[in-house]
Image (cartoon, rainbow, N blue to C red; front, side):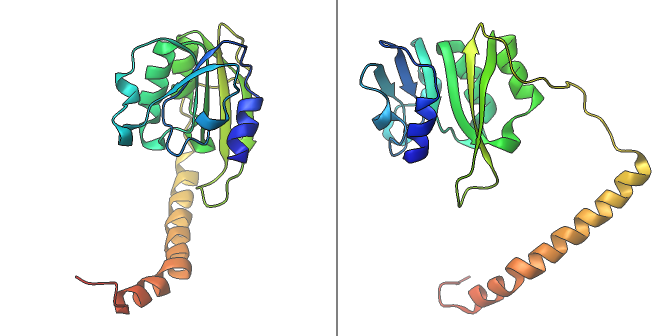
Length: 184
Protein backbone atom coordinates (compact mmCIF):
# COMPACT_ATOMS: atom_id res chain seq x y z
CA UNK A 1 0.00 0.00 0.00
CA UNK A 2 2.84 2.41 0.76
CA UNK A 3 4.39 1.74 -2.63
CA UNK A 4 1.11 2.35 -4.45
CA UNK A 5 0.72 5.70 -2.66
CA UNK A 6 4.29 6.68 -3.55
CA UNK A 7 3.70 5.83 -7.22
CA UNK A 8 0.41 7.71 -7.37
CA UNK A 9 2.17 10.74 -5.88
CA UNK A 10 4.78 10.78 -8.68
CA UNK A 11 2.09 10.59 -11.37
CA UNK A 12 1.11 14.02 -12.77
CA UNK A 13 -2.61 13.78 -12.04
CA UNK A 14 -4.70 16.96 -12.22
CA UNK A 15 -7.84 17.95 -10.34
CA UNK A 16 -10.89 16.36 -11.98
CA UNK A 17 -8.95 13.69 -13.93
CA UNK A 18 -10.80 10.42 -14.46
CA UNK A 19 -8.54 7.58 -13.25
CA UNK A 20 -9.13 3.87 -13.87
CA UNK A 21 -7.54 1.04 -11.91
CA UNK A 22 -7.97 -1.81 -14.40
CA UNK A 23 -6.66 -4.52 -12.05
CA UNK A 24 -7.91 -3.39 -8.67
CA UNK A 25 -7.20 -6.62 -6.78
CA UNK A 26 -7.25 -5.55 -3.12
CA UNK A 27 -7.47 -1.86 -4.07
CA UNK A 28 -3.88 -0.94 -3.18
CA UNK A 29 -4.00 1.77 -5.87
CA UNK A 30 -7.71 2.52 -6.05
CA UNK A 31 -8.16 3.32 -2.35
CA UNK A 32 -5.29 5.80 -2.45
CA UNK A 33 -6.20 7.85 -5.48
CA UNK A 34 -6.53 11.50 -4.45
CA UNK A 35 -10.01 12.69 -3.43
CA UNK A 36 -9.90 15.32 -6.18
CA UNK A 37 -9.98 12.79 -9.05
CA UNK A 38 -12.90 10.79 -10.42
CA UNK A 39 -12.18 7.09 -10.22
CA UNK A 40 -13.40 3.68 -11.27
CA UNK A 41 -12.02 0.17 -11.27
CA UNK A 42 -12.03 -3.19 -13.00
CA UNK A 43 -11.27 -6.59 -11.51
CA UNK A 44 -11.81 -9.80 -13.45
CA UNK A 45 -12.53 -11.72 -10.21
CA UNK A 46 -15.49 -9.40 -9.67
CA UNK A 47 -16.76 -9.68 -13.26
CA UNK A 48 -15.44 -6.28 -14.34
CA UNK A 49 -13.07 -7.12 -17.19
CA UNK A 50 -10.66 -4.36 -18.20
CA UNK A 51 -10.43 -5.73 -21.72
CA UNK A 52 -14.17 -5.13 -22.15
CA UNK A 53 -13.92 -1.54 -20.85
CA UNK A 54 -14.43 0.90 -23.74
CA UNK A 55 -15.07 4.23 -22.03
CA UNK A 56 -12.24 6.77 -22.33
CA UNK A 57 -10.44 7.77 -19.15
CA UNK A 58 -7.73 10.34 -18.48
CA UNK A 59 -5.40 7.96 -16.67
CA UNK A 60 -4.82 4.26 -16.12
CA UNK A 61 -2.82 3.43 -12.97
CA UNK A 62 -2.30 -0.11 -11.76
CA UNK A 63 -0.18 -3.18 -11.18
CA UNK A 64 -1.25 -5.38 -14.09
CA UNK A 65 -0.86 -9.14 -14.49
CA UNK A 66 2.48 -9.73 -16.17
CA UNK A 67 1.05 -12.61 -18.20
CA UNK A 68 -1.14 -10.16 -20.12
CA UNK A 69 1.24 -7.22 -20.37
CA UNK A 70 1.14 -6.89 -24.18
CA UNK A 71 -2.66 -6.82 -24.12
CA UNK A 72 -2.59 -4.32 -21.22
CA UNK A 73 -0.39 -1.94 -23.22
CA UNK A 74 -2.50 -2.34 -26.38
CA UNK A 75 -5.82 -1.73 -24.63
CA UNK A 76 -4.52 1.07 -22.39
CA UNK A 77 -3.36 3.21 -25.32
CA UNK A 78 -6.86 2.96 -26.82
CA UNK A 79 -8.72 4.33 -23.81
CA UNK A 80 -6.26 6.57 -21.92
CA UNK A 81 -6.40 10.22 -23.02
CA UNK A 82 -3.63 11.65 -20.82
CA UNK A 83 -1.47 8.85 -19.51
CA UNK A 84 -0.72 5.38 -18.25
CA UNK A 85 1.09 4.42 -15.05
CA UNK A 86 2.01 0.77 -14.64
CA UNK A 87 4.01 -1.10 -12.01
CA UNK A 88 5.65 -4.02 -13.81
CA UNK A 89 8.72 -6.22 -13.64
CA UNK A 90 11.72 -4.42 -15.04
CA UNK A 91 12.40 -7.34 -17.40
CA UNK A 92 8.99 -6.63 -18.95
CA UNK A 93 10.19 -3.35 -20.43
CA UNK A 94 10.99 -4.34 -24.00
CA UNK A 95 11.40 -2.42 -27.26
CA UNK A 96 8.22 -4.05 -28.56
CA UNK A 97 6.20 -2.75 -25.61
CA UNK A 98 7.78 0.68 -25.70
CA UNK A 99 6.97 0.80 -29.39
CA UNK A 100 3.28 0.16 -28.61
CA UNK A 101 3.33 3.29 -26.45
CA UNK A 102 5.34 5.39 -28.88
CA UNK A 103 3.32 4.37 -31.95
CA UNK A 104 0.18 5.51 -30.15
CA UNK A 105 1.54 8.92 -29.15
CA UNK A 106 2.73 8.12 -25.60
CA UNK A 107 6.19 8.95 -24.30
CA UNK A 108 7.62 7.47 -21.12
CA UNK A 109 8.19 10.41 -18.75
CA UNK A 110 8.85 8.53 -15.49
CA UNK A 111 10.94 5.40 -15.01
CA UNK A 112 10.95 4.66 -11.28
CA UNK A 113 12.77 1.49 -10.14
CA UNK A 114 11.63 -0.17 -6.92
CA UNK A 115 12.01 -3.43 -5.04
CA UNK A 116 9.22 -5.46 -3.51
CA UNK A 117 10.40 -8.38 -1.40
CA UNK A 118 8.87 -11.61 -2.58
CA UNK A 119 8.35 -10.43 -6.16
CA UNK A 120 10.59 -11.72 -8.91
CA UNK A 121 13.41 -9.27 -9.56
CA UNK A 122 13.20 -5.51 -9.57
CA UNK A 123 10.05 -3.66 -10.52
CA UNK A 124 9.63 -0.42 -12.40
CA UNK A 125 6.81 2.07 -12.44
CA UNK A 126 6.54 3.71 -15.81
CA UNK A 127 4.43 6.71 -16.58
CA UNK A 128 3.69 7.21 -20.27
CA UNK A 129 2.04 10.50 -21.15
CA UNK A 130 0.16 11.35 -24.33
CA UNK A 131 2.06 13.72 -26.64
CA UNK A 132 5.14 13.87 -24.38
CA UNK A 133 8.75 13.29 -25.29
CA UNK A 134 10.03 9.79 -24.44
CA UNK A 135 12.94 9.70 -21.97
CA UNK A 136 13.89 6.17 -23.07
CA UNK A 137 15.77 5.28 -26.21
CA UNK A 138 15.99 1.73 -27.52
CA UNK A 139 17.14 -0.37 -30.42
CA UNK A 140 14.56 -2.22 -32.42
CA UNK A 141 17.20 -4.75 -33.50
CA UNK A 142 18.08 -8.00 -31.72
CA UNK A 143 21.83 -8.30 -31.70
CA UNK A 144 23.48 -11.71 -31.60
CA UNK A 145 26.54 -12.92 -29.73
CA UNK A 146 29.40 -14.23 -31.84
CA UNK A 147 28.83 -18.00 -32.33
CA UNK A 148 31.83 -19.06 -30.21
CA UNK A 149 30.70 -16.86 -27.28
CA UNK A 150 27.14 -18.14 -27.63
CA UNK A 151 28.27 -21.77 -27.22
CA UNK A 152 30.26 -20.87 -24.10
CA UNK A 153 27.26 -18.96 -22.72
CA UNK A 154 24.86 -21.88 -23.34
CA UNK A 155 27.16 -24.31 -21.49
CA UNK A 156 27.53 -21.94 -18.54
CA UNK A 157 23.77 -21.33 -18.43
CA UNK A 158 22.99 -25.05 -18.34
CA UNK A 159 25.55 -25.59 -15.54
CA UNK A 160 24.21 -22.59 -13.60
CA UNK A 161 20.62 -23.83 -13.84
CA UNK A 162 21.61 -27.33 -12.77
CA UNK A 163 23.66 -26.08 -9.82
CA UNK A 164 20.91 -23.65 -8.82
CA UNK A 165 18.32 -26.44 -8.81
CA UNK A 166 20.56 -28.77 -6.80
CA UNK A 167 21.38 -26.06 -4.25
CA UNK A 168 17.91 -24.64 -3.84
CA UNK A 169 15.25 -27.19 -4.71
CA UNK A 170 16.56 -30.72 -4.79
CA UNK A 171 16.49 -31.35 -1.02
CA UNK A 172 13.26 -29.41 -0.58
CA UNK A 173 11.59 -31.50 -3.27
CA UNK A 174 12.76 -34.75 -1.67
CA UNK A 175 11.43 -33.63 1.74
CA UNK A 176 8.14 -32.57 0.22
CA UNK A 177 7.69 -35.89 -1.55
CA UNK A 178 8.20 -37.66 1.78
CA UNK A 179 5.68 -35.42 3.53
CA UNK A 180 2.02 -36.18 4.15
CA UNK A 181 0.91 -33.30 1.90
CA UNK A 182 2.41 -34.97 -1.15
CA UNK A 183 -0.02 -37.50 -2.56
CA UNK A 184 -0.04 -38.89 -6.07
